[in-house]
Image (tube, rainbow, N blue to C red; front, side):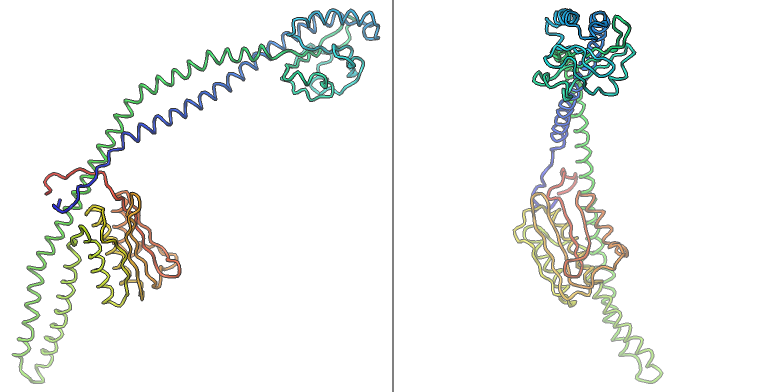
Amino acid sequence: MAATDPPPPVRTGVVGTAVRRFVALSAVALVVLGVGAVVVTSRIAEESALHEARLRGSTIANAVAAPLVDSAVRAGDPDALGHVDEVLRARMADASLAHVKLWTSDERVLWSDEEGITGRHFDLGPDELALFGTRDVVADLSDLEKEENVQERPEGELLEVYAGTFDADGAPLVVEAYLSTAEMRSNQWGILGQLLPVTLGVLLLYMLVMVPLAVGLARRVERGEQHRARLLRHSLRATDRERLRIARDLHDGVVQDLAGLRYAMPVVAAHLPDTPEAAPARATVGEASTILARDVEALRSLLVDIPPPTLSGRGLHDAAEDLAERARRAGTAVTVEVPTDATWSTDVARVAYRVLQEGLRNVLAHAEAPTARVAVRHEDDTVHVTVEDDGRGMVEGRPAEEGHVGLTLLRDHLADLGGHLEVGDRDGGGTRLSARIPATWPTDVVPGES
């Protein structure tokens, strides 16, 4: 690493991030599991209460209420009804049985503990009507919304049981009983108190066991990421050194030879006789001289592009101005917006320079643009690089990378670094190339580099 390069920051937050994420997800799992346990417990308690209610309702209907009902009760005899009232109210004395109604098959309330209900007709549901002539039982949490429940609504939630039976004379009868939900709620909290601590305790124990494993795995991932970053940096540095070597060999060898041959061609032309027979030879020598001059200039321009310029400090700004000046000479006016006091590392600046170089190369080769703009800005943890022009724009329906090997390689390179490259139409016409480069890379010093 060059002595002028600032030391690259080392990102070591993989372990912390992984552990925090694991703990956060585990906390969410605890909450979800707790809510699920409450729901399941409520359902278990409700089903248990309904089962108990069906048993009690059946017992009240068959063992208590049905034997009390005979023809006298059905006829409304006061003494007979008084006996029913005395027996059933005694069974309701402990408050576990809240209300009782006796129904006949014509949907008439034969007896009720509530004032003004006995003798009235109300509409029963199909499930309740189906109980007449059977000993079946149905139970549910009552919403107390029926017309017959007007006096019961202030009492809140109740368990409602309908039990089919036969009275003392064998006539079909349905006994409706309302039971308190206090016992059901008590059972619910009892089950929850037993289930929830065990369930959450098992999950907490699992978390304690898994945290060391998660930390170990995160450290392995972090080491792998740092190793990958070292290989990538080493590859980049090796590529730059190879580019410098190629540039030096070309300059000291092929370019010098071609330049010498270019200067020798006029000497050859001067020794050719000035005769019509020698005219083709002189023309060939002149054409060869022109071609040599053009090729030597092209090679020298290429040599400028091959080695990366010094990019520390304000180096990226100056390098961008050099690229812009070359484009201006080719006929495109380029505006440069690159800071002169950049704080990013030379490695980041080198990648940004490659984006600017590839972007302007495509502008000159394809855009036919009068003007162009290049910009680099540092925002949060990302360096944004933009190259845009007002040229002819992209070919409709054709991918930006088609026919542009440089763009494809640049996109892959940025993806390896955790960055991104986009090429699309510019607002107002033309093309816009934008790249996002991480301002810091996970890295260690590559062995053998100075």
